[in-house]
Amino acid sequence: MILVTGATGKVGGQVVSQLLDAGVAVRALTRDPASATLPEGAEVVRGDLADPATLDGALDGVESVFLVWPTLSADHAAPATVERIAGHARGVVYLSSQGVPDPAPGVPEEDPNSILGSHALVERLIERSGLEWTFLRPGGFAANTLMWAPQIRDTGVVRWVHGAAARALIHERDIAAAGVSVLTGTGHAGARYALSGPEVLTQVEQVTAIGQAIGRPVRWEDLPPETALRGLLDQGWPPAAAQEMIGAYAQMAVSPEPVTPTVEELTGRPATPFRQWASDHADDFR
Ligand SMILES: NC(=O)c1ccc[n+]([C@@H]2O[C@H](COP(=O)([O-])OP(=O)(O)OC[C@H]3O[C@@H](n4cnc5c(N)ncnc54)[C@H](OP(=O)(O)O)[C@@H]3O)[C@@H](O)[C@H]2O)c1
View 1 (cartoon, rainbow, N blue to C red):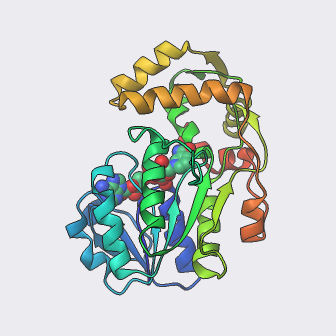
View 2 (view 1 turned 180 degrees about the vertical axis):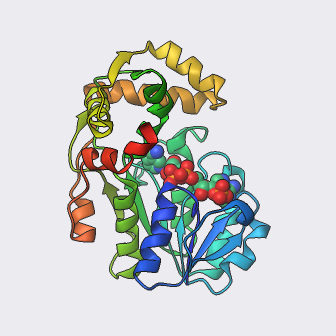
View 3 (view 1 turned 90 degrees about the vertical axis):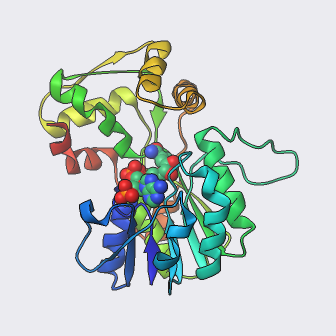
């Protein structure tokens, strides 16, 4: 039995489906089973990663956990939650992030209020937990571009920072396939896998690809960083995380995200191009 957290989300949802397709017994965690839409065949359980006491039932009889962590919002509970998982399961595959530094003497810790700091915290706790672990460290999700969907639907123009920022965006299906390959295979203990899509595209090129997928042109307009920052803060983003996000786009304009061969190495199939992701999700932008 494998417990999948974030099971109603983009990556966890794919992990649930792909494990079921592979004939593996799956338990899917959600805070609200009544409103969750999950594939038939998954055992749906209630639990809150921010409240470790709610997890015992979900963890009972589980061999491994695919852990999607609610970045920052549950960090106060991370030590107790990881301890709880280690009290029940043998192994964990943790959905971490590109950019988390490997532990080494002299490497400074990330700001605990940042997204990378949250992932680094969970990685360190897992490393010390006694669990057999594997970390998946993807770069940008292709699905991040869904944040542009309302603008594309309403105006056909995307206003956001640093059109020249270049990313090797990854399909959620590929992250999940890498995770399923680790969960169902052997020899992955202690690995930190950097995952990416197959190619680097600037944000302007991503928007063009979305336009091609939906059959009408979409235009890019650069937004000043301070305006974008204000927008994130207005949406309730913690200031450190919002600044980290805008800073990351500035950085990617001069230093594109790297392409890694890991998806193909783990799954035997090349990573999916962004154009295919855009075509898979065209209806979300129409
Ligand atoms: N976006 C990127 O470019 C990127 C890159 C690298 C890493 N990541 C990491 O990927 C993860 C997000 O994955 P995703 O995009 O697949 O998720 P998502 O689609 O945003 O879904 C979030 C999931 O988290 C669950 N959740 C939220 N709070 C919870 C809590 N307190 N207890 C239990 N479950 C909770 C939700 O389940 P319910 O609402 O059903 O409870 C939902 O299934 C984050 O850790 C993020 O930092 C993202």
